Length: 127
Image (cartoon, rainbow, N blue to C red; front, top):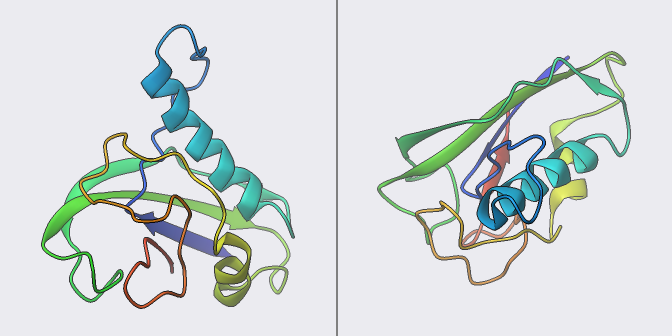
């Protein structure tokens, strides 16, 4: 099974960056590691793609507080066990997981967490 994650939170991969090399890139990579670890809570993931970022119109996709064109990070991954993971499970696992903000996001986050179910603050979706 293949899943796609879209988020308004900066999850840029910066592998090998140390805190002293570039604090901003280090924090971006910490968000990416959070995504990988949270997605892996129930199953092993593989073929995960490095996140890409693009400007996308987000009206109706994310929370009501987020409109217009925003930076959206997208990644995909696969799991072997066909029923080992579902979108509902991902929404449960990711909701309220802490993140680092004020990186390259084009939105203002009231709470520094992934939100999967809040109608106004949803900042991550799964397909």
